[in-house]
Length: 142
Image (cartoon, rainbow, N blue to C red):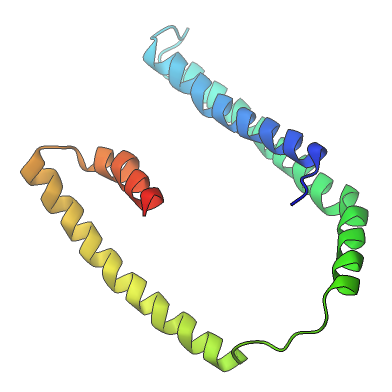
């Protein structure tokens, strides 16, 4: 695989900005160093959300307009290297499989939520810790 350095830099910058946008208001609130109780956190949160919204709009413009030529070049290379392949399953088979698997995941999610609540009570661990920390770690390990 080949990665574009410009896209990687932009994505890293967006990630860093999102982390800082969440971190600064939280630090201001929990260090109790705000000038006016509650209002300075709200002002900082609104400012960072506006900055992040403008940055996201600029990112979308960057991705959709300036990167269009590189996508077209990649598509032309793929068209010449790959022959037309027939799909392995039909459109209706894909829709049926998608529906069945969606229902199955929905059913299993209900059992998972019940299990998390039971584990939280029996182990005396907060539900938020299990949901935010343990569940993603186990999900990525599987």
